[in-house]
Length: 131
Image 1 (cartoon, rainbow, N blue to C red):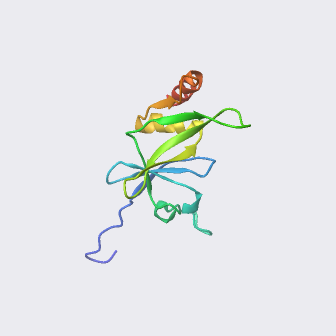
Image 2: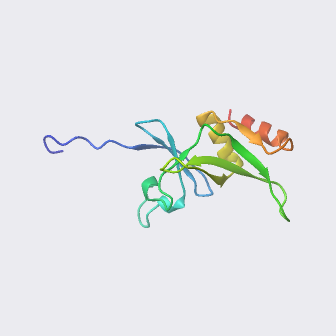
């Protein structure tokens, strides 16, 4: 390192990568959790760049709960909605998995709720998995 050159500071710490392509990273300076998808990988490079994802850096919105919604139409079961914030602070969400809901509950203390009363058993299982 040249004299007077500051050492490179790692901006993010890896928390968890999921099979669906979602990657959760902690921003070291603030502790916020960034969420990216498979578009943050660059062909031929094993490193992950959350800033280079198609959506930019999306932040886990810990002020809102993870929500389970009943599927409509011919599909049975439910899907998991993970609350996010865009770089400009706009509320949005992404569809996730039970494992991601459990991770959000354990790592960020987020509540997990269901749309209506139909998800009691699923919520208990997700919260139990987080322990």
